[in-house]
Length: 115
Image (cartoon, rainbow, N blue to C red; front, side, top):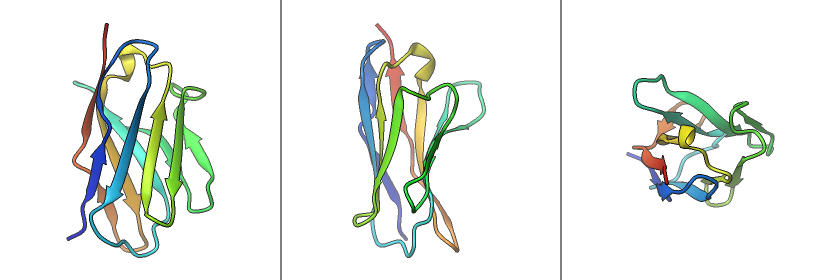
């Protein structure tokens, strides 16, 4: 069974940067959209950014201008570049990939922003 493997989380200082990566463990037929969600303690999971197969991206208002989502369609890898990090960005970040028949989720990677 194909799984999504995330990496790149960790501890960053306010104003710092991190880059998350997400790659499938096997082949996924026709990945449509790729996205990153996050869930902070005591809060619901929210969409952070998503990108279509055509490269169109959309972002949550809270991260616009600071985060950049990208994808490598050849390898099926998704990336999230996070700049100007704030303590409010602290959360578990989850990768998501949608194919015509199934929605895939990663196991989550912790991002902590603290001085």
